[in-house]
Image (cartoon, rainbow, N blue to C red; front, side):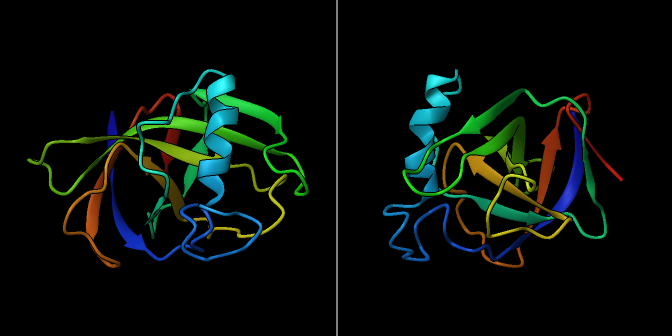
Length: 150
């Protein structure tokens, strides 16, 4: 596992449903989780929202995702999308217990809107990590065979 420092940043709010977009009642993740489960990735016990982590000044490069799902038609009117997932861990400090998580990567070339900056990764964590806010610094650990930072 390799580690990188990350800062919690505000996202679009559509994954969790905070944006109140009527197209995505309860958020996009609530709608997508069953489609991911059908393809072999059960996220039903994970928090249905994303933690947006800026790696700035770093960027990332996808090497070999743990899962890639193509042409997922998860919404009745929105276009199908491709998604990749990478197992990771999120920690508040080097000494803290890690929180199991997944990097959630909707492929930008199939994503119709709500794009992220090139230094931001979306994380689906097993639980809400207490006492973090926008601007909090965290540590992200990933499998260096799946994704790299530069």
